[in-house]
Image 1: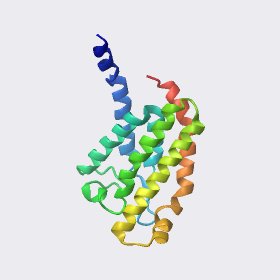
Image 2: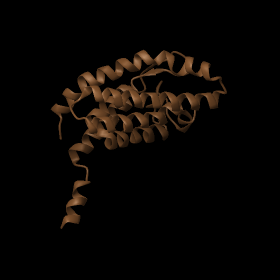
Image 3: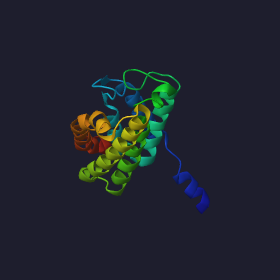
Length: 183
């Protein structure tokens, strides 16, 4: 009897699946909208992921983002600039697409350990964003054969302010949304 209770606790409810699908859809809609400021565009992907983390937690937000990656990998134009396909995932910005998984996982750890504390959410999201920068910049340096400081000037410095504002927006509004759709 106890074994069966543990199995049912691990199931995802229809409501949770619906919220995951909704966040995947929102990512598919907002992520392609980008401002090209060079090789690496400004997108709304990490803003949506910050909201996903607050609403879903680490596991479900990560699954939601993995579904988005699969949709893009098969060629649906859901990546920045309305592009899709494996080529985009292994191109100069591919490191960021993979690096976003760090945001969902690390940010999710903090939202789950400190529910109802947006300051802690921000700490997790900042750490996740730093991981995105590290992963994406190294990927870019390897593919584009660039120097470290040049890569930072292209891959990190132009985005810090935008990303800080996205984290602030998600942490300010996200908890209110989470309370309203609590499942």
